[in-house]
Length: 491
Image (cartoon, rainbow, N blue to C red; front, top):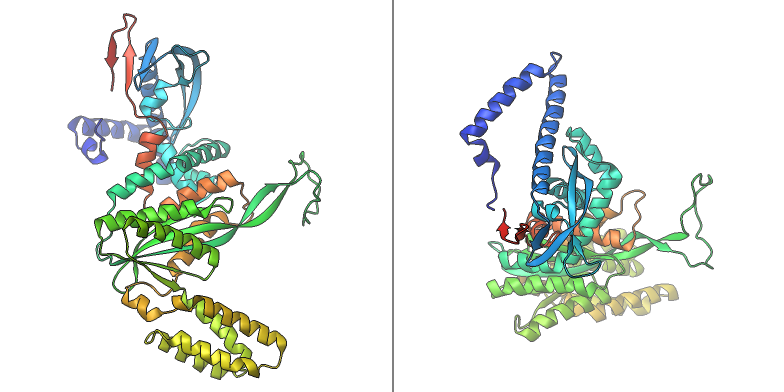
């Protein structure tokens, strides 16, 4: 069925006539008090009007099913009737509907044709399900319920919102790879993009983890005894969740568009990097001239993962090579620490660091001269602790200086900093999953980070269209079988 647009519906003469009739009646029945009271009453009446209309729609559809239905070519027979409450933005709707069991299979799977045909998701209407999924990407359901109330809507309870949100996000996780493939086929590199910069990082999240039976509890700040039955023993531990970015950059290395991914600490980041690699692959097939590079901090485990991803592209012939860069901000922090070990005067250190910054912009050999400078200063240090610390900094430079050629990065139109990836750790994970008092179990965090990353990538609406149409229920092709077994396709 072709999707209807609000503008075209409202332009129909019969709709305009209906609106005018409802407006006249509404103004007549509204309380004669102030405008604010009339507005609240009008919204309440409007909610009830829409709720009754949708409830009648669902009841009519439900009553139209015969004893047998065919879903995706499979025959199902009426199994059990029940009255179920479905939730919408405007309130609950009690619908008598039937489940149907697969024919020829003892205790076989059941379907609810009404839910399949209408796109009902976890007993929620499509509009409510979309609102919940979108809200779950932004904040917790307590806040979402408050927003519903402020908007004069009539949603279900917070626990129901939470249930729908978690189950929908679980479906999003299970469907993510398939939907991403569809999105990549429809996406082209943005205009003005000349290169792709990828990066991987981590940030901590509070995780609820079961405690072994013989393990002592962790220290707690609780002073008052629990008045309810205590939960099963658990501890809250901070674990490092992963975040990855794929940035399309212009000739100045500035990000034009960024695709973001995130996953909890328990997951292998290889899957996350595979998604990043797939984005690069799809973009390069459309625009083979795009340059590719990795720009991130110096954590070796992160570099191993991102290099493995680009190595696959190279093996496939998608790229001949790629550039690599250590985030310059992190490097300058480390150089400042090293310089503080050998130069006591703050003003001298400041001038030296400013000079190094300027030289990084003009010569790739700058890091080599800085390494030589620090090596010459090393024997002059009298404290063994200072020598040890400086040697650690020198070892870091020696291992990574091939990724500190910032002139080369600039010529490749790549950024010299990993600010996009660093900010993704904040916008995708911290702002959603590290709020006061929040703690997560693995499935819940995985689900919320999936929706959050999709939202922060500007993909939410496209992602939901695929999720709602294909993943939350199968492709709809419901045939109604009359007692004489002649089929009638409806819809």
